[in-house]
Each structure stands twice: as structure tokens, then as C-alpha cells.
Length: 117
Image 1 (cartoon, rainbow, N blue to C red):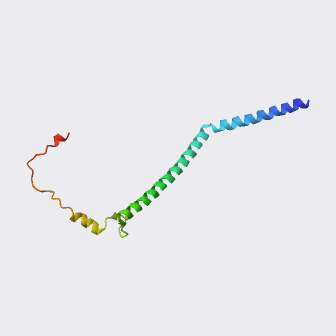
Image 2 (tube, rainbow, N blue to C red; image 1 turned 45 degrees about the horizontal axis):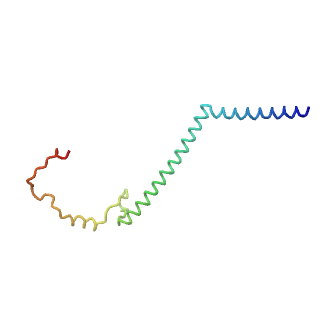
Image 3 (cartoon, rainbow, N blue to C red; image 1 turned 90 degrees about the vertical axis):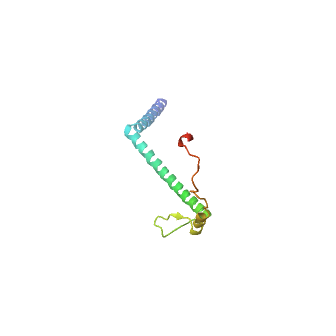
């Protein structure tokens, strides 16, 4: 008699456990639950993308500062948008060293644009 009661109780407990497990899985597969899961995943992906963009922006700023230091470019605090510009002497030197005469006379060879293709 005790044996039958034990197995009856064990069977009933297993049935209750299985039914509960199946009902939880079915609730997870309802359209509302799937939509909520998708929304949560989208928000999580958005946060990760935002963090990635901030990391990229910080890396770009750091690399830009390194390049500006290496090239001798310094931001002008008087400019409203902090645009960097070449320092005066270097720019003047580059313009003065440009000795090419762009209009050195007419050439006798005519140039046909159609020959480039």
C-alpha cells in the first residue's frame, strides 16, 4: 500500500512539474512575449552600438591629437569651431617655394580630350 502511494505521489509530482514547465515555455512563445524579447534585444544592441560609437569617437580624437602634435598643428582657441590650421611660417614657406609657372606660354601640341578614353 505504501509503495502504491509513493509511486502515485511521485507520478503526480512529475506531472505537475512537467505541466508547469510546458506552460512556461508556451507563455514564452506567445506573440506578446516574443515582441517584448525582441524589443529588449534591440535596446541592448542599441546600447552596445552607442558604446562602440563613443569608443570610436574617443579613439579618433586621441589619434587626431597625436597626429596634430606630430605635424605641429595646434587648434586655435579663438576660432568658434576649433578648426586646426597650419602655422603661419610653414604655410608661407610652402607658398614661397612654389616656383612653378603655371602659364608658361602656349604649346604647339593640341590636346584632344577624346584620346584619353
